[in-house]
Image 1 (tube, rainbow, N blue to C red):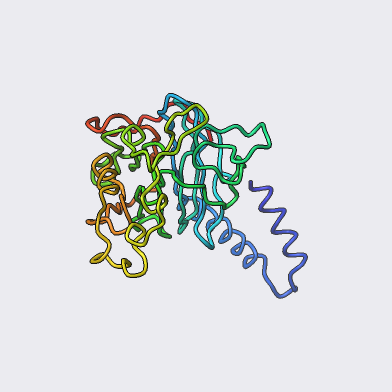
Image 2: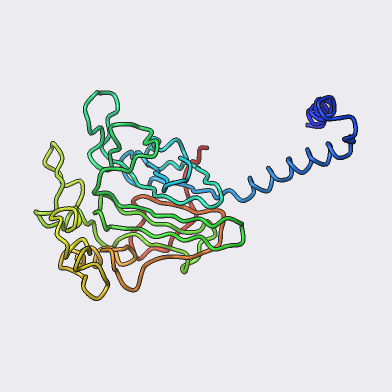
Amino acid sequence: MARLIIHLVAKAIMKFPIFVSAISVISFFWHSLLSGNIAAAEQVTFYVHNKCPFPIWPATAPNTGNPVIADGGFYLPSSRTKRISAPPGWSGRIWARTGCNFNSNWKPACETGDCDGQLACNGHIGTPPATLVQVSLQAGGTKPNFYDVSLVDGYNIPVSVTTRSVSPKCTVRGCTKNVNSICPSELQVVNGQGEVVACKSACLAFNLDKFCCQNEYGTPNTCKPSLYSKLFKDACPCYYSYAYDSPPPLISCTSNEYIITFCPATWGSEPTAETGHTSS
């Protein structure tokens, strides 16, 4: 590293006017190096863990103006963990795709959460229904980050989110029931084998204002919980069950490490920091 810095400084001195001192150039390079280290320290790490008894293909999609992280998607076998990083101020969504086959030209490639048949979503939002982890990170390591789990577009598999130093107030727990097993027939998504693999929200299934909380139903006073959103809320009390869920199940905690677990342990179990085999 020292040799590299000296080499870069020497090249810079040759390019700078004679009145620029070597000291000022060295100061510039040290400032650049320190700035890079600070930025790296502010990175937030997500440990994405698969506790499902089957493989999943987690995916990420940034909000407008944010970069793609983790290549937009990756394969994650059962009992494995993938470590991914996001820059300060990043916001977007993370979800799991199921039943994928990227070895054919068929689209969609996944039974749930598909993004244009690609492994790397490259900013594309997955096809609903899929359980969504929604994240908004704050720039600066001392500011709280915001996150929630949403079923506003529907459900495919359960997920929990917590800080790596597990704290109940910083935890979005999983579900008390398998939503797919109690999903009304009019909301069901069924695969080629006749299995229910996802459950649509009422908004997604019927596209009616009263379910989508829009137009004359566009306020908390006019858009009330439906029988369908109550079913979601009963099964997954910590998740957004519809757009105006109240009180809002939004978590705010300060940390630079979080664990996202797909198919977490049963509701009565305490969340743990155990993540299985981890890969970068």
